[in-house]
Length: 290
Ligand SMILES: [Mn+2]
Image (tube, rainbow, N blue to C red; front, top):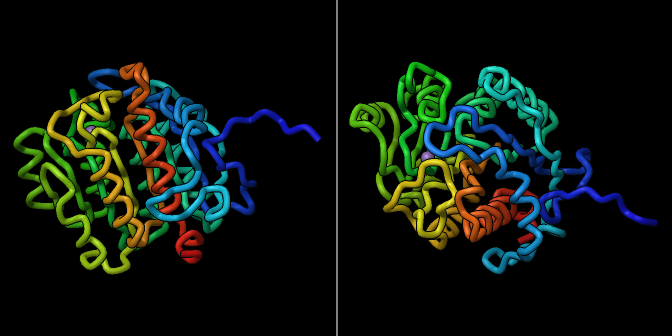
């Protein structure tokens, strides 16, 4: 029998019903202020992922046998209408959570995270957000818009309350955002130091994980909307992903790859590898096999 030609992220070809993790693309970059293009990330990652091995030597686990992932493809999101796009994402994540599965969203710009957190926060009391990023994303508004990639964590704070957002890698924002972070969030500047202590600090608390790939240094990840020098190496991100696997993660996203700004493809390779490692690290059935 011949197989139909449908391209998923590598080895993520399980049926929805049998899947433990449900992956989908959110190709949205309507509020990107500097360099748009993140809408192309998910399709590029699917194509480029097949250049990677499905086996992780870091974890001694293989995507084909250690977990069960269904790639739904991309959502068809409204462009230029942020509220509608967020509602579509929220409905999708809610359905995945209701079916007892782990949602994995590939952005898109960072605003897409708000739709996922809205769905998770409504369903899961005591939710915390772990946020890796170069930017605070804590503006009250950006050029008058309350829904923006630059305001997303402020909106998340309004949903979750005091000391529920744990930021790492932060090195850019307005002074007011840094003061706000100091007063209301748990923010670590510049790098990922302290991420190994999260397991104790959160002690089983449900976590939504949001990784803005611009936390990486532009020398390894130039393909992004708002590059910010002074970032971490891929190896540091890799190590962090293994620590994050010890948390009670109920959903996660990987955002802000913008393929048009990196014709070398290094940025897409970093994003694909990080996703493979996250799928294995955050899979409860993979962990049970170790
Ligand atoms: Mn960012």
